[in-house]
Each structure stands twice: as structure tokens, then as C-alpha cells.
Length: 293
Image (cartoon, rainbow, N blue to C red; front, side, top):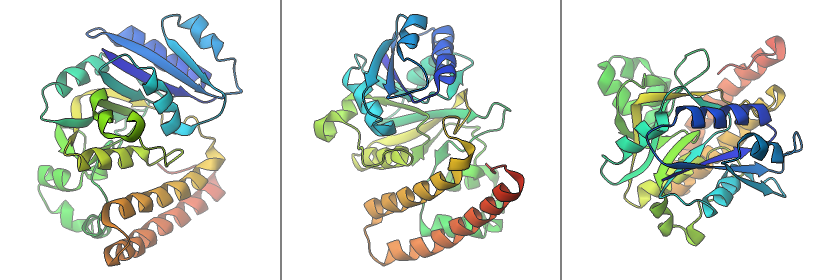
């Protein structure tokens, strides 16, 4: 059985759409839906239970963040598989069943992610490599990877260089659809995922930790979900979140490489790139009110 865990924080309508899409489209497997309300003040969370009597509703007295909320859900999970699913996603086909079946064919899988699209159909960068100095330099001088054949370039770089059009192993996947075996938590303290990040960046951290345990993370291209992305975040706060994501990226790098010369060289290269992009996005947001993806 798959335990599908969804965190709700003031996204009642979106969360209802997500849950409805699960019940409407998931046909081939046994599953349970565990909804953790993270101290929302938008709507009485008991309305979820009224609308979906079969789901398990857990209400938290405080907002424990993405990691904490998912750990609350995991503690009540009955399935041998766990799927962390964002509230701002929805299914259009039997994506969960397809992903579970594919997962069962893989060699020592850690996490499996699937293809994600924005509502307008544009592909999101779901499968990624861990950042490194070489990755940053290839990205900075991107004419070099663009000279490579597409499949070689895609496997090397992933992210925005990958059209999400074939199955592959990867370093990490977007946490909006995060499928793994519950047994992997036997390796973690208190059988919980790492909660050091309140929100953002935990997917990369968890994938690194799974990788350190000898598991391989995978991307599955043969099904897709819609991911609205940042629907639970007001537009004016998104620039602030970019700063948080930057700090968490550096924290993951310290976890991977330590705090020696490599780390500081990476900080210089990555920092110059990202703060330049941040400055440009800030200007565009100030003058147009729109945030670039």
C-alpha cells in the first residue's frame, strides 16, 4: 500500500483539488491519503473530512513546516511506500500507480520523481544534479554543453538542460512528488526525515542522505503531474524565499563537501551567478510586478 501524505497550510481549494484528483485517477494500487493541516487559519480543517470521509486528517497545533508536517504524516502511515505530494499538484492520469510499478523494477531505489508540468504545459526542472564547481562553470559558459549531443548534455547536466523525455538516474528530484520505500527510514534517527530546513531545500538534502546510504535516485518520464508551484506563497514573498533557498543550497554543499577551499570557491562562483540573477529578478519584479520562473 502507498501512503500519500499531503501538507495543507491555507490552501484549502488547491488541496481539495489535489485530493480529488488522487481519488479520481489512482486505479491500480491500494492507497491511503493522509492530510496534515499545519495550523491553517483559512478554513476549519474538519471540512476536509466532511468532503473526503476516507482520508486520514491530522491537525497540528503549530506550523511545523514541510519536513515536520511530513514526518507527522509518516508516523501515522500504514503503507510500505511513502509518497510526499504537494498540495499544489493534481493528477491527470494514473501517475501514482505507474510510478509505484516502475519503482518496483529499479535497482536499490532511493527516491523516484516524475515529470511535472506547469498548468500551461511547460516542463519543470524536476530531475537535477547536485551543484558543483564544474556544473556551475558549464552553466555559466553554457555554449560548451550546448555543443554536445542532446542526450549526453541532458545526462551530464539535467535540470534546465533536460527535456524530461527519458527515464534516468539523477542526484535529486523535486519534493512535490517524492516516492520512496518506508523501510529506508530505518536508517534515520527516530525513523524521521531530517527536519533542519523548515521549508525549501529539504528534497535535495534528503536525496543526498539517501545517496550516502548507497541508494540511487531516479526520474520517471512516462507519466506526469501538474505542479502549480508556489501557489501557497504570496507573490511579494517569493524574492525573500529565493534568499532562503540560496542559504539552504550552501548548507547542502557544506554537508557534501565540508567547509574547505572547495566550498568557498563554490560559494564565490555560485554566489556571483545567483545574486546577479536575483538582482535582475528584483528589478523586473519592481517595475512589472511579475516574477520570472
